[in-house]
Image (cartoon, rainbow, N blue to C red; front, side):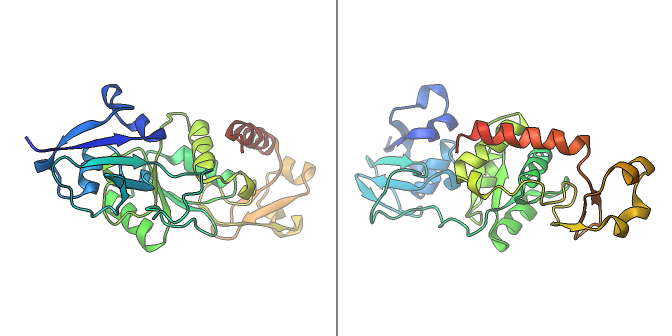
Length: 249
């Protein structure tokens, strides 16, 4: 049988079964039409890959494979200058923007709490998510490898962790975003931006004790929801500090 040999490096090994990590894996050539097919057949979405070498030469995702080819696959590099080697990942966005699949609602809330533009609805279908990601140039966050294998998805990341706070730490590390955090500037419910308002503007919408004891308020520019620095505010501040500390950025 004609085979190609594929080895994944760095964090890409997290996506492979234990027996395929840190070693070259044989892939039957008849199963693949391109290097993209071969890599994704192993379970590694193309959105996780930044550099591919075939027999030591850099190639793009559409490169056709031949029997005996040896393929080296690398994740995005954050601290190593690749010089003139062609990068497969698109250049970083001026401002990180996300769209999340239906299973990541709590991660969406964390990202909004940190000040990031994070689109989320619990009824988004996979095709809609892929379309939004492509059309609006958003990073697609998901735990569904199949969704990231869609050719139209250019920017995406496969979430590894189960806990929402750990997921947020992952995203901050992956995109080096700790310096871009703008805490509590977005609505946790609709993703709109918050703006400060005078107490008089929202007084008729406040519970009596809130109206009596609080004097700083903000409203969502999209849905109009009112926010103030109550006990929920202090809890969120604590979560933000923990998340940034864990990100190590």
